[in-house]
Length: 379
Image (cartoon, rainbow, N blue to C red; front, top):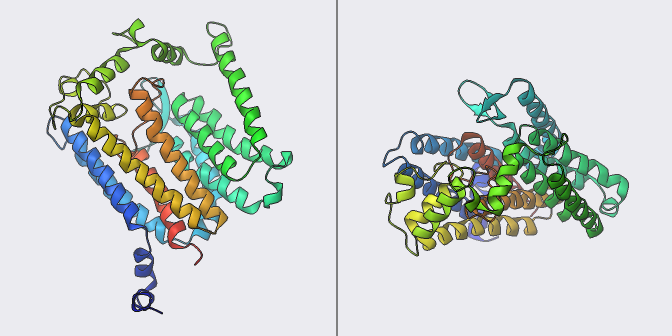
Protein backbone atom coordinates (compact mmCIF):
# COMPACT_ATOMS: atom_id res chain seq x y z
CA UNK A 1 0.00 0.00 0.00
CA UNK A 2 1.39 3.39 -0.99
CA UNK A 3 1.71 6.26 1.46
CA UNK A 4 -1.03 8.17 -0.41
CA UNK A 5 -3.46 5.24 -0.24
CA UNK A 6 -2.71 4.80 3.47
CA UNK A 7 -3.23 8.52 4.08
CA UNK A 8 -6.61 8.51 2.35
CA UNK A 9 -7.79 5.39 4.21
CA UNK A 10 -6.71 6.81 7.55
CA UNK A 11 -9.08 9.81 7.39
CA UNK A 12 -12.73 9.70 8.57
CA UNK A 13 -15.23 8.10 6.17
CA UNK A 14 -17.09 11.33 5.38
CA UNK A 15 -13.91 13.19 4.50
CA UNK A 16 -12.68 10.20 2.51
CA UNK A 17 -15.84 10.35 0.39
CA UNK A 18 -15.23 14.04 -0.29
CA UNK A 19 -11.64 13.26 -1.35
CA UNK A 20 -12.92 10.57 -3.74
CA UNK A 21 -15.31 12.95 -5.50
CA UNK A 22 -14.70 13.93 -9.10
CA UNK A 23 -13.23 17.36 -8.35
CA UNK A 24 -12.58 18.18 -11.99
CA UNK A 25 -16.34 17.96 -12.55
CA UNK A 26 -16.98 20.23 -9.55
CA UNK A 27 -14.57 22.85 -10.93
CA UNK A 28 -16.26 22.70 -14.35
CA UNK A 29 -19.71 23.21 -12.83
CA UNK A 30 -18.49 26.21 -10.82
CA UNK A 31 -16.82 27.69 -13.92
CA UNK A 32 -19.98 27.43 -16.03
CA UNK A 33 -22.10 28.86 -13.20
CA UNK A 34 -19.71 31.82 -12.85
CA UNK A 35 -20.15 32.52 -16.57
CA UNK A 36 -23.87 32.61 -15.88
CA UNK A 37 -23.43 35.07 -13.01
CA UNK A 38 -21.45 37.39 -15.28
CA UNK A 39 -24.11 37.31 -17.98
CA UNK A 40 -26.94 37.93 -15.50
CA UNK A 41 -24.96 40.86 -14.10
CA UNK A 42 -24.52 42.19 -17.63
CA UNK A 43 -28.15 41.89 -18.77
CA UNK A 44 -29.24 43.70 -15.59
CA UNK A 45 -27.18 46.70 -16.68
CA UNK A 46 -24.28 46.13 -14.30
CA UNK A 47 -26.33 45.19 -11.26
CA UNK A 48 -26.36 42.09 -9.06
CA UNK A 49 -30.10 42.50 -8.68
CA UNK A 50 -32.57 41.18 -9.60
CA UNK A 51 -30.95 38.09 -11.17
CA UNK A 52 -27.23 37.54 -10.47
CA UNK A 53 -27.42 37.73 -6.67
CA UNK A 54 -30.41 35.39 -6.48
CA UNK A 55 -28.73 32.96 -8.88
CA UNK A 56 -25.54 32.94 -6.76
CA UNK A 57 -27.54 32.04 -3.66
CA UNK A 58 -29.30 29.25 -5.52
CA UNK A 59 -26.03 27.88 -6.85
CA UNK A 60 -24.47 27.83 -3.37
CA UNK A 61 -27.57 26.00 -2.14
CA UNK A 62 -27.19 23.67 -5.11
CA UNK A 63 -23.56 22.95 -4.23
CA UNK A 64 -24.60 22.03 -0.69
CA UNK A 65 -27.28 19.73 -2.10
CA UNK A 66 -24.79 18.16 -4.52
CA UNK A 67 -22.31 17.37 -1.73
CA UNK A 68 -25.12 16.06 0.48
CA UNK A 69 -26.48 13.77 -2.23
CA UNK A 70 -22.95 12.58 -3.09
CA UNK A 71 -22.37 11.40 0.49
CA UNK A 72 -25.41 9.09 0.42
CA UNK A 73 -24.63 5.51 -0.76
CA UNK A 74 -25.75 4.80 -4.30
CA UNK A 75 -27.78 1.77 -3.22
CA UNK A 76 -30.10 4.12 -1.30
CA UNK A 77 -30.86 6.14 -4.44
CA UNK A 78 -31.51 2.92 -6.36
CA UNK A 79 -33.95 1.73 -3.69
CA UNK A 80 -35.91 5.00 -3.48
CA UNK A 81 -35.95 5.76 -7.23
CA UNK A 82 -39.47 4.35 -7.62
CA UNK A 83 -40.77 6.44 -4.72
CA UNK A 84 -39.15 9.60 -6.12
CA UNK A 85 -40.62 8.92 -9.56
CA UNK A 86 -44.09 8.38 -8.07
CA UNK A 87 -43.78 11.58 -6.01
CA UNK A 88 -42.79 13.54 -9.13
CA UNK A 89 -45.77 12.07 -10.95
CA UNK A 90 -48.13 13.14 -8.14
CA UNK A 91 -46.67 16.66 -8.25
CA UNK A 92 -47.30 16.81 -12.01
CA UNK A 93 -50.93 15.87 -11.37
CA UNK A 94 -51.15 18.54 -8.63
CA UNK A 95 -49.95 21.12 -11.16
CA UNK A 96 -53.12 20.42 -13.15
CA UNK A 97 -55.24 20.93 -10.02
CA UNK A 98 -53.56 23.82 -8.17
CA UNK A 99 -50.72 25.01 -10.38
CA UNK A 100 -49.79 28.66 -10.90
CA UNK A 101 -50.53 30.07 -14.35
CA UNK A 102 -47.98 32.34 -15.99
CA UNK A 103 -47.74 33.43 -19.64
CA UNK A 104 -50.55 31.04 -20.58
CA UNK A 105 -48.88 27.96 -19.07
CA UNK A 106 -49.65 26.10 -15.84
CA UNK A 107 -46.30 24.59 -14.83
CA UNK A 108 -45.53 25.66 -11.26
CA UNK A 109 -46.65 25.01 -7.68
CA UNK A 110 -46.35 28.09 -5.48
CA UNK A 111 -44.69 27.14 -2.17
CA UNK A 112 -44.54 30.72 -0.90
CA UNK A 113 -40.76 31.00 -0.66
CA UNK A 114 -40.28 29.62 -4.17
CA UNK A 115 -42.15 28.24 -7.16
CA UNK A 116 -41.54 24.54 -7.75
CA UNK A 117 -41.61 23.19 -11.30
CA UNK A 118 -42.27 19.42 -10.96
CA UNK A 119 -41.36 18.75 -14.59
CA UNK A 120 -37.76 19.63 -13.70
CA UNK A 121 -37.77 16.97 -10.97
CA UNK A 122 -39.20 14.44 -13.39
CA UNK A 123 -36.26 14.85 -15.77
CA UNK A 124 -34.02 13.28 -13.12
CA UNK A 125 -36.36 10.85 -11.36
CA UNK A 126 -37.38 9.37 -14.72
CA UNK A 127 -33.74 8.58 -15.52
CA UNK A 128 -33.19 7.13 -12.02
CA UNK A 129 -36.27 4.89 -12.16
CA UNK A 130 -35.50 3.56 -15.63
CA UNK A 131 -31.89 2.86 -14.59
CA UNK A 132 -33.16 0.99 -11.50
CA UNK A 133 -35.61 -1.00 -13.65
CA UNK A 134 -32.90 -2.18 -16.04
CA UNK A 135 -30.55 -2.89 -13.13
CA UNK A 136 -33.23 -5.22 -11.74
CA UNK A 137 -34.10 -6.78 -15.12
CA UNK A 138 -31.82 -9.63 -16.29
CA UNK A 139 -29.86 -8.66 -19.41
CA UNK A 140 -31.36 -11.50 -21.48
CA UNK A 141 -34.86 -10.04 -21.01
CA UNK A 142 -34.02 -6.48 -22.06
CA UNK A 143 -35.39 -6.80 -25.60
CA UNK A 144 -38.34 -9.08 -24.80
CA UNK A 145 -41.61 -7.33 -25.82
CA UNK A 146 -43.32 -7.91 -22.46
CA UNK A 147 -40.45 -6.19 -20.61
CA UNK A 148 -40.35 -3.15 -22.90
CA UNK A 149 -43.93 -2.03 -22.31
CA UNK A 150 -43.32 -0.89 -18.71
CA UNK A 151 -40.36 1.47 -19.43
CA UNK A 152 -42.31 2.91 -22.39
CA UNK A 153 -45.26 3.58 -20.07
CA UNK A 154 -42.92 5.02 -17.41
CA UNK A 155 -41.64 7.49 -20.03
CA UNK A 156 -44.90 8.35 -21.79
CA UNK A 157 -47.00 9.03 -18.68
CA UNK A 158 -45.05 12.10 -17.43
CA UNK A 159 -44.45 13.20 -21.03
CA UNK A 160 -48.21 13.38 -21.58
CA UNK A 161 -48.83 15.25 -18.30
CA UNK A 162 -46.16 17.86 -19.11
CA UNK A 163 -47.50 18.27 -22.65
CA UNK A 164 -50.88 19.21 -21.16
CA UNK A 165 -49.40 22.16 -19.19
CA UNK A 166 -48.55 22.93 -22.08
CA UNK A 167 -44.75 22.56 -22.21
CA UNK A 168 -43.63 21.05 -25.50
CA UNK A 169 -39.91 21.59 -24.83
CA UNK A 170 -39.80 19.74 -21.50
CA UNK A 171 -42.06 16.95 -22.76
CA UNK A 172 -39.65 16.34 -25.66
CA UNK A 173 -36.70 16.33 -23.24
CA UNK A 174 -38.47 13.73 -21.07
CA UNK A 175 -39.22 11.60 -24.11
CA UNK A 176 -35.64 11.76 -25.41
CA UNK A 177 -34.12 11.34 -21.93
CA UNK A 178 -36.12 8.17 -21.37
CA UNK A 179 -35.20 6.90 -24.84
CA UNK A 180 -31.49 7.41 -24.08
CA UNK A 181 -31.64 5.17 -20.98
CA UNK A 182 -33.70 2.52 -22.77
CA UNK A 183 -31.23 2.51 -25.68
CA UNK A 184 -28.17 2.32 -23.40
CA UNK A 185 -29.77 -0.55 -21.49
CA UNK A 186 -29.37 -2.63 -24.65
CA UNK A 187 -32.86 -2.70 -26.16
CA UNK A 188 -32.74 -3.94 -29.77
CA UNK A 189 -32.48 -1.24 -32.45
CA UNK A 190 -35.59 -2.54 -34.24
CA UNK A 191 -37.77 -1.07 -31.50
CA UNK A 192 -36.24 2.35 -32.07
CA UNK A 193 -36.81 2.02 -35.82
CA UNK A 194 -40.47 1.36 -35.06
CA UNK A 195 -40.60 4.40 -32.74
CA UNK A 196 -39.01 6.62 -35.42
CA UNK A 197 -41.59 5.42 -37.94
CA UNK A 198 -44.33 6.18 -35.42
CA UNK A 199 -42.82 9.62 -34.77
CA UNK A 200 -42.85 10.44 -38.49
CA UNK A 201 -46.50 9.46 -38.60
CA UNK A 202 -47.22 11.58 -35.52
CA UNK A 203 -45.52 14.63 -37.04
CA UNK A 204 -47.61 14.16 -40.18
CA UNK A 205 -50.74 13.93 -38.03
CA UNK A 206 -49.74 17.12 -36.18
CA UNK A 207 -49.61 19.10 -39.41
CA UNK A 208 -52.72 17.45 -40.86
CA UNK A 209 -54.73 18.20 -37.72
CA UNK A 210 -54.09 21.95 -37.80
CA UNK A 211 -57.29 23.96 -37.96
CA UNK A 212 -59.48 20.93 -37.30
CA UNK A 213 -61.49 20.08 -34.20
CA UNK A 214 -58.87 17.51 -33.19
CA UNK A 215 -55.67 19.53 -33.69
CA UNK A 216 -52.84 18.06 -31.61
CA UNK A 217 -50.95 21.25 -30.66
CA UNK A 218 -51.88 24.63 -29.27
CA UNK A 219 -52.16 27.55 -31.72
CA UNK A 220 -49.05 29.24 -30.29
CA UNK A 221 -47.05 26.04 -30.80
CA UNK A 222 -48.04 25.97 -34.48
CA UNK A 223 -46.97 29.61 -34.74
CA UNK A 224 -43.57 28.69 -33.29
CA UNK A 225 -43.17 25.99 -35.94
CA UNK A 226 -44.12 28.52 -38.64
CA UNK A 227 -41.56 30.93 -37.23
CA UNK A 228 -38.90 28.23 -37.20
CA UNK A 229 -39.57 27.37 -40.85
CA UNK A 230 -39.74 31.02 -41.97
CA UNK A 231 -38.76 33.62 -39.32
CA UNK A 232 -38.96 36.46 -41.87
CA UNK A 233 -42.68 35.85 -42.41
CA UNK A 234 -43.51 37.75 -39.21
CA UNK A 235 -40.35 39.55 -38.01
CA UNK A 236 -42.22 41.86 -35.61
CA UNK A 237 -44.59 39.21 -34.29
CA UNK A 238 -44.03 35.48 -33.85
CA UNK A 239 -40.61 35.71 -35.56
CA UNK A 240 -39.35 38.56 -33.38
CA UNK A 241 -37.42 36.37 -30.91
CA UNK A 242 -35.45 34.52 -33.57
CA UNK A 243 -34.87 37.61 -35.71
CA UNK A 244 -33.37 39.57 -32.81
CA UNK A 245 -31.40 36.54 -31.64
CA UNK A 246 -29.77 36.09 -35.05
CA UNK A 247 -28.92 39.81 -35.19
CA UNK A 248 -27.21 39.56 -31.80
CA UNK A 249 -25.33 36.37 -32.72
CA UNK A 250 -24.09 37.86 -35.98
CA UNK A 251 -23.04 41.18 -34.45
CA UNK A 252 -20.76 39.45 -31.94
CA UNK A 253 -18.21 38.43 -34.58
CA UNK A 254 -15.11 36.55 -33.45
CA UNK A 255 -14.35 38.33 -30.18
CA UNK A 256 -17.63 40.08 -29.35
CA UNK A 257 -18.59 43.66 -28.57
CA UNK A 258 -17.19 43.43 -25.05
CA UNK A 259 -18.57 42.77 -21.58
CA UNK A 260 -21.79 44.76 -21.00
CA UNK A 261 -21.53 46.25 -24.51
CA UNK A 262 -24.16 44.14 -26.27
CA UNK A 263 -26.62 46.45 -28.00
CA UNK A 264 -29.40 43.90 -28.48
CA UNK A 265 -29.61 43.12 -24.77
CA UNK A 266 -28.72 46.57 -23.42
CA UNK A 267 -31.35 48.27 -25.59
CA UNK A 268 -33.92 45.56 -24.75
CA UNK A 269 -34.34 44.33 -28.32
CA UNK A 270 -33.64 40.78 -27.16
CA UNK A 271 -36.56 39.16 -25.26
CA UNK A 272 -36.05 36.71 -22.38
CA UNK A 273 -32.40 37.79 -22.29
CA UNK A 274 -31.87 36.41 -18.77
CA UNK A 275 -33.46 33.00 -19.40
CA UNK A 276 -33.96 31.23 -22.73
CA UNK A 277 -31.86 33.65 -24.83
CA UNK A 278 -28.94 34.23 -22.47
CA UNK A 279 -26.61 32.33 -24.82
CA UNK A 280 -27.35 34.97 -27.46
CA UNK A 281 -26.25 37.69 -25.03
CA UNK A 282 -23.03 35.80 -24.28
CA UNK A 283 -22.27 35.35 -27.99
CA UNK A 284 -22.89 39.03 -28.70
CA UNK A 285 -20.60 40.22 -25.89
CA UNK A 286 -17.85 37.58 -26.15
CA UNK A 287 -18.23 36.52 -29.77
CA UNK A 288 -17.59 33.18 -31.41
CA UNK A 289 -14.64 32.50 -29.09
CA UNK A 290 -16.77 32.99 -25.98
CA UNK A 291 -19.58 30.83 -27.35
CA UNK A 292 -17.20 28.01 -28.29
CA UNK A 293 -15.49 28.25 -24.89
CA UNK A 294 -18.81 27.66 -23.13
CA UNK A 295 -19.58 24.79 -25.51
CA UNK A 296 -16.21 23.20 -24.68
CA UNK A 297 -16.93 23.47 -20.95
CA UNK A 298 -20.23 21.68 -21.51
CA UNK A 299 -18.47 19.04 -23.60
CA UNK A 300 -15.92 18.44 -20.82
CA UNK A 301 -18.72 17.94 -18.29
CA UNK A 302 -20.24 15.32 -20.61
CA UNK A 303 -16.85 13.63 -21.07
CA UNK A 304 -16.19 13.37 -17.32
CA UNK A 305 -19.66 11.89 -16.77
CA UNK A 306 -19.30 9.37 -19.60
CA UNK A 307 -15.83 8.27 -18.46
CA UNK A 308 -17.12 7.83 -14.91
CA UNK A 309 -20.06 5.77 -16.21
CA UNK A 310 -17.85 3.54 -18.38
CA UNK A 311 -15.47 2.86 -15.49
CA UNK A 312 -18.32 2.03 -13.09
CA UNK A 313 -19.08 -1.69 -12.82
CA UNK A 314 -22.44 -1.11 -11.13
CA UNK A 315 -25.19 -1.24 -13.79
CA UNK A 316 -27.54 1.19 -12.05
CA UNK A 317 -24.78 3.75 -11.48
CA UNK A 318 -23.54 3.47 -15.05
CA UNK A 319 -26.99 3.78 -16.65
CA UNK A 320 -28.03 6.63 -14.36
CA UNK A 321 -24.83 8.59 -14.98
CA UNK A 322 -25.11 8.14 -18.75
CA UNK A 323 -28.78 9.11 -18.62
CA UNK A 324 -28.02 12.30 -16.68
CA UNK A 325 -25.19 13.12 -19.09
CA UNK A 326 -27.55 12.58 -22.03
CA UNK A 327 -30.25 14.76 -20.47
CA UNK A 328 -27.67 17.48 -19.76
CA UNK A 329 -26.55 17.33 -23.40
CA UNK A 330 -30.15 17.69 -24.58
CA UNK A 331 -30.54 20.77 -22.38
CA UNK A 332 -27.78 22.83 -23.96
CA UNK A 333 -28.10 21.34 -27.46
CA UNK A 334 -31.80 22.24 -27.69
CA UNK A 335 -31.26 25.71 -26.19
CA UNK A 336 -28.40 26.57 -28.53
CA UNK A 337 -30.25 25.19 -31.55
CA UNK A 338 -33.29 27.21 -30.53
CA UNK A 339 -31.53 30.59 -30.28
CA UNK A 340 -29.68 29.98 -33.57
CA UNK A 341 -32.92 29.23 -35.42
CA UNK A 342 -32.07 25.55 -35.92
CA UNK A 343 -35.04 24.42 -33.80
CA UNK A 344 -38.39 25.95 -32.82
CA UNK A 345 -38.49 28.12 -29.69
CA UNK A 346 -39.68 25.69 -27.00
CA UNK A 347 -38.60 27.42 -23.79
CA UNK A 348 -35.64 25.26 -22.72
CA UNK A 349 -33.14 27.09 -20.44
CA UNK A 350 -29.35 26.99 -20.82
CA UNK A 351 -28.12 24.75 -17.96
CA UNK A 352 -26.32 26.52 -15.08
CA UNK A 353 -26.37 29.81 -17.01
CA UNK A 354 -30.03 30.80 -17.49
CA UNK A 355 -31.83 32.35 -14.54
CA UNK A 356 -34.08 29.87 -12.76
CA UNK A 357 -34.55 28.21 -9.38
CA UNK A 358 -36.00 24.74 -9.94
CA UNK A 359 -33.80 24.02 -12.97
CA UNK A 360 -30.60 25.03 -11.14
CA UNK A 361 -31.31 23.08 -7.94
CA UNK A 362 -32.51 19.94 -9.72
CA UNK A 363 -29.48 19.97 -12.00
CA UNK A 364 -27.13 20.19 -9.01
CA UNK A 365 -28.96 17.29 -7.35
CA UNK A 366 -28.47 15.35 -10.60
CA UNK A 367 -24.73 15.95 -10.49
CA UNK A 368 -24.82 14.95 -6.82
CA UNK A 369 -26.18 11.59 -8.00
CA UNK A 370 -23.35 11.38 -10.55
CA UNK A 371 -20.87 12.07 -7.73
CA UNK A 372 -22.55 9.48 -5.49
CA UNK A 373 -22.16 6.87 -8.23
CA UNK A 374 -18.51 7.90 -8.63
CA UNK A 375 -17.68 7.93 -4.90
CA UNK A 376 -19.39 4.62 -4.10
CA UNK A 377 -18.36 2.74 -7.25
CA UNK A 378 -17.01 -0.81 -6.76
CA UNK A 379 -13.24 -0.82 -6.39
